[in-house]
Length: 308
Image 1: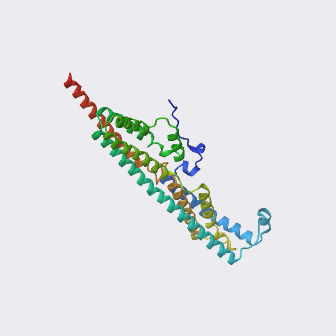
Image 2: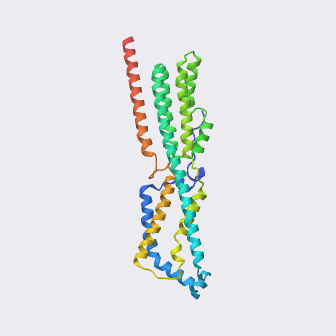
Image 3: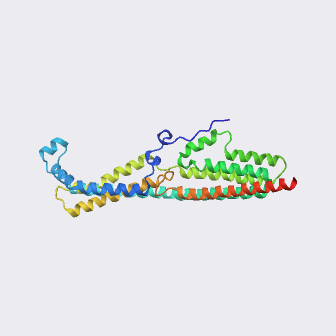
């Protein structure tokens, strides 16, 4: 019997950090609430430093090695270019990730429908003994296949390929044996088992992130550049209102980045996690299987008692 292997997680699976650790709703707000006040407090100091650099302050220039002002034309070019690139990349990234989230929910409920159909057909078309075998396979399937949403999809697919006897294959063998025995009704249930394999593959495909890690890094760099224009002006003046506004700006930038990173990771607990939906469906499936198995056991006991 082949040794059961758990899919690789964390760094060993090659997943970026933002796909290993979900921020969660509380983490998103905490990141923004921390970054905003810190940026507001640092604003006067940074304004004074940028003014000293642009006014050729000898001491500052000697430490930083950079001096001189920024022409207004270059300031405008910097602001417009950074704003355009950040807006485009942010919108594109978020659109792709939300589209993936929709596909993931569709595949989840499709898989649930196939499981429901499989349970119903096994009761209608199969004898009691083979029905219990199929129900056992379904229970094993949801215990393993529905736990794999916390793992790398490619690793899970590779694990299924290497497996000598996963739950779907076990159910398929039972049904193929019934077809060979001359019962065509087994073929109806076998079609549902095959559909289950395809539905699981579609869910894994939807879980695979289409956005490379370098794109998130580029988006973070552009967000940093978007916060720099206030320091391009030679004036070092600051006011309480400007501190508050700058703090709000940084908080919003961090909040947007945190939301993007969170929606990028539906496999970990977070604001965009599927854990709640999967938990509700999983409990319902387990309750249904338990009720059916109890009913089958009761009918078997009644039959044996009557025969005795």
